[in-house]
Image 1 (cartoon, each protein chain N blue to C red):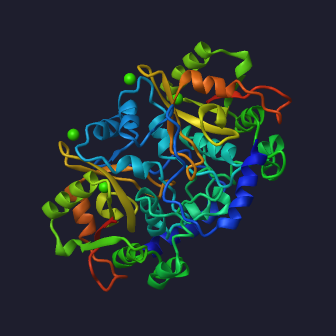
Image 2 (tube, each protein chain N blue to C red; image 1 turned 120 degrees about the vertical axis):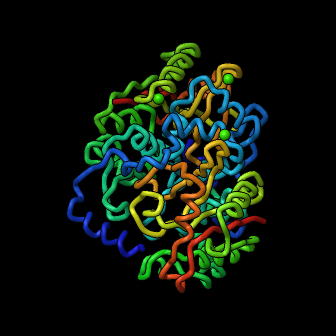
Length: 238
Length: 238
Ligand SMILES: [Ca+2]
Ligand SMILES: [Ca+2]
Ligand SMILES: [Ca+2]
Ligand SMILES: [Ca+2]
């Protein structure tokens, strides 16, 4: 799916001088977090413990194939995993899209392989990199789950301060352009049955509230780059 | 003030292997946004229009002298100023700490001069770079203002969707380590008379709620690198 995305990038080189003031338009089934309705949903959310720890580490993926590394950096920071120090951070620490690739993580998925065909990371590689950071990880392919199980899991992790949940889904299935994508979840609103995706492709889309059923269906799609398994979700914690 | 900060960075090179799980501790007069009390203040804030547009563009300064460029990138994105496209953003646009330095901005303050003595940007340079992006800018040195005027201005800009306000203050004056710093404001809470600073030095401190009087006093300090003028605040809009 990243192939299509990167072709768009190549095409864009020809119109480099065009400056855009905003992200891409949202289809009617999605509610942007910064819209009045989106803000109201967060204020009335029944499971939002993960929103603030993630939002203070919200980051933009470094390149079109790096939704996985951006998501991993956000979640490692939000979990307060001991962070690598550098002179750029005054000897304090912060995970970023380069230093998440420790030797153990690189053994699972080398950074260079993410920006080469077939591009990006699979659900299983995502889980593997978290495990390489000595975290407790639960990788669930959507075909092995169902909407109710996913919803219960999401609510549980979104309420637990020591756990986070991230999703691997097909964008076109929720009405976005267009391929496989990875991002962490920030909150759940029971009244609308919507889940907040903190989309790391911040140049492309704002965070959106999507119906749980729509998100589940978008995860329950086959990833040709992952042995024909479906996409899905990953729970991560200490 | 940045000299002290950069010396700390040099010292840190000697303890590179130390990994920190969290940011530095907050003094008792500050309330972290992610604490229960900090979240409650945001939910009950009387002027928070700027929080969401800024938070979805929240970013970490690239190096210890780059609080100014990080702040500028966040505010340009939040204002929906037409953004420079690149192949890293699929032909869509996003301001970052490099591409804010257009020829006009560079004429005000070259990027290279920020990472060399005396390090960083002054209040007037900050305003000048925004003006170079064709925005309406109001630079106020604290010595030309007072607490009531600052509070009224902050509330007004925090409620106005087309304007943002950022501050240049002395960290040690609010109980932090330690030099001159720049960051955008996200919200104001009337009941506690506190202002939310979205601190771009995310490896160092979380966003904090500080009393308006404390922040004003921290702005009302002399910046030896700015002809002995005081620090202060900048309003920016279309
Ligand atoms: Ca609700
Ligand atoms: Ca959680
Ligand atoms: Ca209040
Ligand atoms: Ca405003």
